[in-house]
Length: 224
Ligand code: 6GU
Image (cartoon, rainbow, N blue to C red):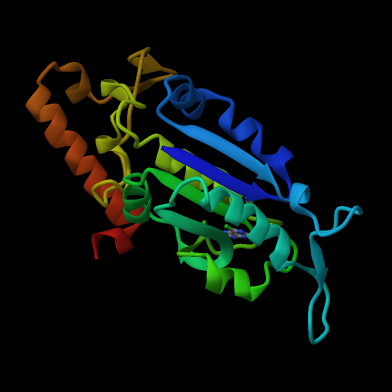
């Protein structure tokens, strides 16, 4: 999968992709990430990309021309399965949407900033508007990093068998069960006996019960 990310703060998107699973996915050639600095498409030599909001009010809005110039250049080179605008008024990102996006070949992400982008960009180019939760961030970059991480780890070959995404919380609408490692006893707190029993079917049964109980307690909304 190739993911292009258009932003006016490219520095915010360097470290999120330089570690761990997303880094490994790139090294294996399973994900190709490209961050594009909107400033390179500025309308004048002062590097202008935004402007005052028509009708008055505080804050600046990203102008159409830099975004259109950048998008047109990218879209002339390949077709995109989704063109996603990261914005607090978008659809809340949940696992089913992540799963669907992970099936694409090329994704194009646009990070909003300040008061947002000119509405005409949304109408002309954007196929999906995505929020990562009900709070306001300074820009779409952290949302883009979250989306990329969630999508890339699902690409075939990225996770090893033992880290398989199939056992993730949310993949089956259940939270993950508790896990333990050595030592079997710590400050008087011991690991549940069943996990030391070697009885795999009973362990799986216990994990399912724990997942259900935890979901019932913490996220009953997931059980409908
Ligand atoms: Cl994607 N962007 C911004 N600016 N704020 C957000 C968000 C995104 N998701 C939640 N809040």
